[in-house]
Image 1 (cartoon, one colour):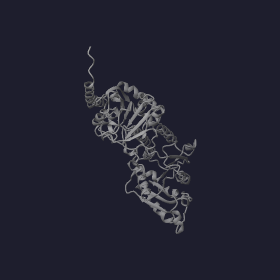
Image 2 (cartoon, helix red, strand yellow; image 1 turned 30 degrees about the vertical axis):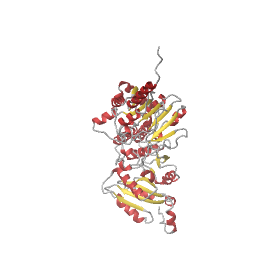
Image 3 (cartoon, rainbow, N blue to C red; image 1 turned 135 degrees about the horizontal axis):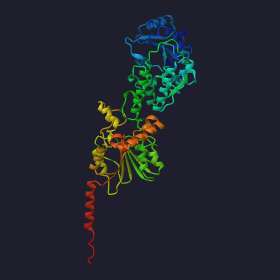
Image 4 (cartoon, rainbow, N blue to C red; image 1 turned 180 degrees about the vertical axis):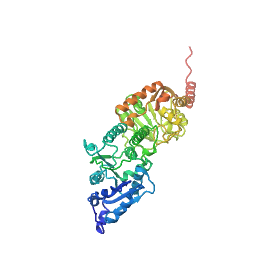
Length: 514
């Protein structure tokens, strides 16, 4: 394969094509690297503005020298050969290559292994979905064609291990990938910019962590079948260690998604509110609040945000007013919107509403005591139902982490870094009693397993077990505190009411004498 160097008008045309980086990771690949380079399809250099990057990960053999020699003997090939001065590991080497792609403005980067295990001839087909805008990542799968992996020489123990790990990861992550452990991958560089791949492991389970990062950022993954080839290459993966690392990385993300243990490496780099989602159809604060409001009620949803329950209440025939510090997009015309920072003096009345929602609100306030006091001052003798939920900082996993010296704030969950206050059941009850709210009922909310695992049997089983544990101890096993309260009139209202009553009685005509 000897692509011709494009010059003049052709060079200007090349600049209009998508820029593709073929990134070859190489470690002790002196026997295979040249053949891999020979097998790169020539049509890629016609379809894309293509560069080839080889990074030798501090091999002790002649891998780097062979790369340099190939560049010299193939002057028409846009080939860059680099060598890490220290061994960075499989994941660390990828980080260098992806950073190269980002800093030099490529549109796609294709990961190819220098040992020849993945067929370079498939590159054109694998790049196509990203070029067409159908995906942000494409994985070559050895399992989409039944029986192909074993026919291609995959050792039985690797076949079984791959199947078990992929099944477990699909269950935990709610995905349906045919293979999590293929190293043949194409990425959109724009997608790589959105995920913190630099925080991932330098070891072989980097590939698992980058999949999780793509999923966390809601980026599209497409799988295409590839042939399986196992030759005489030396496997440098410790299978048992790798399996344990994969399982732990996946479990950490599940805990991250549930808000128990925040993992910065799984947080997309683009800041938004997509992690605040509705939790409906199972035991949750959102579902219980929806159930607690009778049809036809007048609802004030305070701090609703973009994922409020507005449409669900409208379906129940309720009238709804939404209060939030930012305008809620796409709000139905029948819904009143009040823009209000809850730390400021309150701008809304309480009288028109029968039910008030304070779901995951109080913990975000600078001064919850002051807010609840000001809120109660709006109350009269007519009791209003106030439904409140807050995270339970005494949740057992957090207690266990604290025992081992871990107390990590994150972007979501119990230790959301925007939380100004931390509550337990007793702490919230004491606050409500002090501020004059009558507690009607208290429930412990289980962890949102369906949100983390997908709404399937495993999530429902864990949800049921959590509910059973909550019956034993809400304080220990509840993920959130859920309180239904009623307002009582504040002192200022009672004073005004007493003055008005006295004035009314004093000005009334005396009763007739008997």
